[in-house]
Length: 334
Image (cartoon, rainbow, N blue to C red; front, top):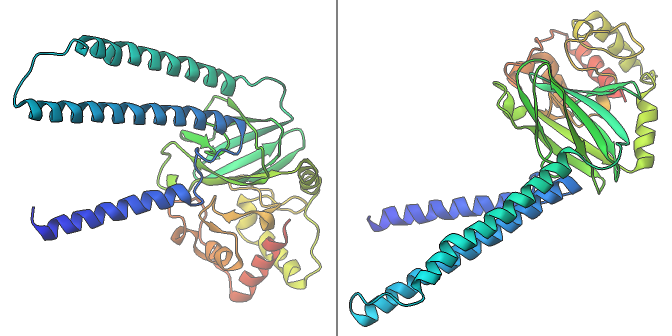
């Protein structure tokens, strides 16, 4: 290999290592940054496997180096040392059996703890996967929202999972393991957050064109903040006194939006798309496709296919004044 090629290879390797380090140290949702008891179990098992693997690699490397150096010093093959058979049995048979047994027992214990947690859940939430967004229902509180899942900190939350169409998989790396969502079947998982914050979740089962942009957020709040959120959500959106927003409601109810979406307290009762009753308070548009800003919202209304190709929302043709009024109305829904 020429010097130039070696240089390119080294630079490429350096860039790759730097990218891995940046991902590990950045704000990406990692199982190794647990914020709940479920993810903490998974992280502990991963670190144990990592440490054992590292020790094995170092020991094997040291033995290989020792063998090479000793062979060169003697100038050729030598008789097999007396401890070789013991080393082969201990390192090649006994040690793997012990480690694999520990891993097996540890894994079964964690699987049982994750699938059958002790004690009742404080909150029960139904999540339904769609192509490509998440429907979120709090049956007891009679709340319907989308893509943002609010939970109280320090309390067990039962999430019942199913899908409206293809297979999906519900995964919040910093809180718990992933659970598949299967049509005609309801799978149950338990989530608990130990710290307030916003935790990104992701569909972990390929579900079509926009699988990578099927994102949701778990918003962990203090119990008091969570109860305040529930109280707001159980009421219809407060009527805005802003005249532009009032005009925007009229535009919304007269446009195709009302045929696909619901806003409580209005004539819009569509069920094809997400319920928009609290849209102004959501973190993103299109299940994590873009942040929920005024500019992104305008682009989504006019041509959502340019932002998230393949979604079911058609382009909405409005004149500039109508568009601005509609944006103001949707932003007022909180």
